[in-house]
Image (cartoon, rainbow, N blue to C red):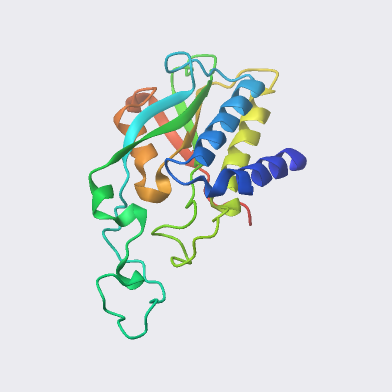
Amino acid sequence: ANERLARTVMYLSSDELEGRGLGSKGLDLAADYIAGQFREIGLKTDLYDGTPFQKFTAPAGSPHGLTPQPTPSKSSDAPNSENSDSNKTSDATSPAAATKRIDAKNVVAVLEGEGPHADETIVIGAHYDHLGHGEPGSLEPDSHEIHHGADDNASGVAAMLEIARQLAARNTKLPRRVVFIAFTGEERGLYGSSHYVKDPLVSLDKTIAMLNLDMVGRL
């Protein structure tokens, strides 16, 4: 189990995935990896047109607003120039991003229960996106290096997958259904979880509990 946890964290936080920013190729690779793990575990994944991907569109902009991201000015003689780098905004906070929408997807899988409470559902979730090369919310907003996101939240995804693996390996079925969800767009504005609540796989009146795994790497 420890080796599996480590492999997942190392892959999701690798340079190849480039920080798993919303709308990035790296985030798509992460989604494919999680879907593959769900299938390997034996969970039900043919949920959305034969796939585990709950697709939607999310705002490209950040809910943090149009906050300039200051960088050192190229010219010390004109620090307030309109062309100065100090007045540039990040892609996530540019005026164009305020109206643009991008494709996004949660990754969902189901472990069915058995018995009189089998129609009741417990959700276990973790967000799989991170900050890419930096955006509002980063502790280093001026850095454009890869923000790997090992703890936030590769650790939560790894824990969710291991929980799924252990529950699926039981000799007897659980008394309730468990829905596993890897949410996207959480760093940018809780977009994935908000979309799921608006369009749940199982109606909310039959969802009795939700466990969210976020930044568990130091526990």
